[in-house]
Length: 368
Image (tube, rainbow, N blue to C red; front, side, top):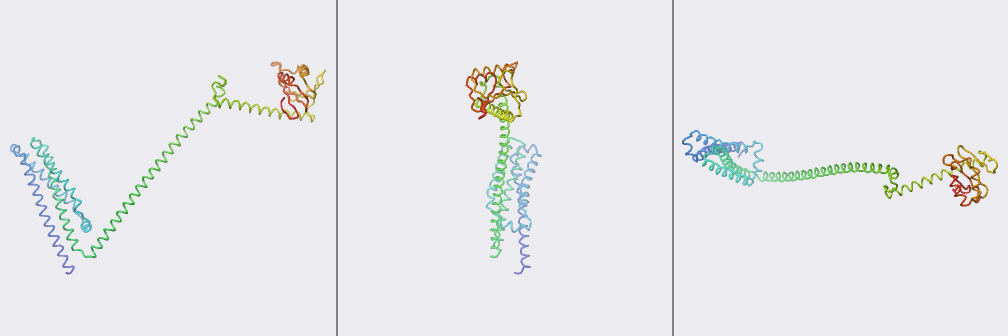
């Protein structure tokens, strides 16, 4: 048979199917009218007095059935370009649950309609179109599923072996593409979840660092204030308000300060003694004594070249009484340099220190 002979045959088959479905559609619409009419008999006694209510019941029931038929049919309509692929990919088994659920809703709605009608509730008019809509939607869906399955079987029988192989290869390729798309989607979701987790971790770290910085600044501020108040606390209550580390630090600071001051005094004394030796500072003789006084600014210096005991120390102090501070009575601006290994007794040293005279031994510049 040629291609020209096949086209009229296919068209004739299509025309036959359209006429068949048209008859079926008319039958379903008429059935919805009959369905609504039978349902209206439930309220036959009430309709005797209200003819308008009977007409309204019949009308809304018919509208629900027609809507169920037409909406289902329009929802199943396809473009001719999609006819072959959609029909071959059709799976009738997937509509079993949908059909069962839709019929179940229709049956339940009919029982609600019957119960409301027994109580003469006008709300039953709202339930009737819902019940007829779902009933005829399920009915038309079942009819279309059966028709589509039959058409699918006829199309498969008319296909050649090559066409079937090509279709199976296409199906396999579509499944592979679908699986690949699902895999890409899953990977994309995992990537998005990972990015979100990283973003939350970064935000959490930023918040943690922020609060750590605030806490660190607060701790440093408190420590600074606490350290700054150490001298005040020490002045108010001595060591009672100081921590153990603060008391130890005060002792260390005091020792370091004394050591630094002692070193500074040593360096200063060395410089003065050097000026005495090279003649930069000229001596001043005390009348009636052999004591030589060297003066640099407000400071005065004495070089001790003979052994000194306590008696000689007292005579020495008496000779220098004119250099006492009038307020404190001490020799606060007088230092003595003990040359070499000249002996100075302990009692003499204690007496001179008590009077405010500092002594340095020139051999090692240690205070004695």
